[in-house]
Length: 324
Ligand code: PLP
Image 1 (cartoon, rainbow, N blue to C red):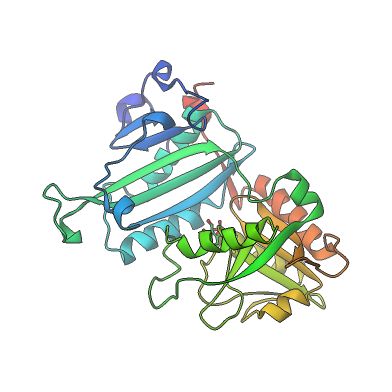
Image 2 (image 1 turned 120 degrees about the vertical axis):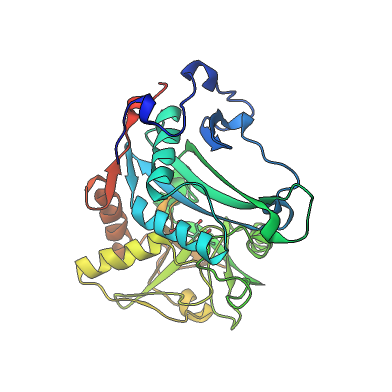
């Protein structure tokens, strides 16, 4: 992608002085909304937007680590796939979206960032109930990198509770369309907090383990990995675990994972763009195996972060527009 002069740009960059950030109200970051780059504090949408009123939206989140996007192509594939399935259209092609994401990161100056692209159904000028009359709205933003697990949890493993809440079934909402239907996940989180856990896993419609708020889950038994096959977002980090396992000669399959199998595993970890591969060492108050972060989990965590410098899987952010 070219990072050319201002005259060749479809979208003008703002004077850097206008991107003053109020660190007390909003995360330090830059958004793209309605054709403009803005500080996060000014990135606002209408209360009549169907994205807000009906959760009618799709999005994707990619991260930047040490100044490089990680697997951006896969995130763009998933985002454009979601747009098509939801019959949404945006006035930007793939290269333009990539350019906007680069600009948000560059203008923010962050070298480790959480970068979101999203599209809402939008609003119709007449407040029509017909979604075809809504004007779809694309936006993007870059804020500091965040992780599901903090540094201490990464070291000692997360304490997770399995809630009895059921993830919205695929027959209702195709989980491959990354979406904001999170009421099931948020209810699961409150169940977990009530039980003294740090985060939650919820179930699929057959009572097997599905996923958690913003992450997939894997278990390791006798050296073999498995992760739930149905009713879950096909996570890019989950896919990366499959790719790393193929390279490392480890067996990894997508299959039903029962609650009992998860609790009897030798190792458990969760995966997300927000944090990568993160160990779980307590489930429902009971230690996973010996409560230590397992050898396979540790090995995959190391490989995962090593690959962030690999040009085959990562691409440098162009910081020529950086405000810092
Ligand atoms: N499952 C859900 C419900 C999510 O929202 C996410 C990420 O936000 C994931 C799984 C993990 O997906 P990825 O690895 O692409 O970040």
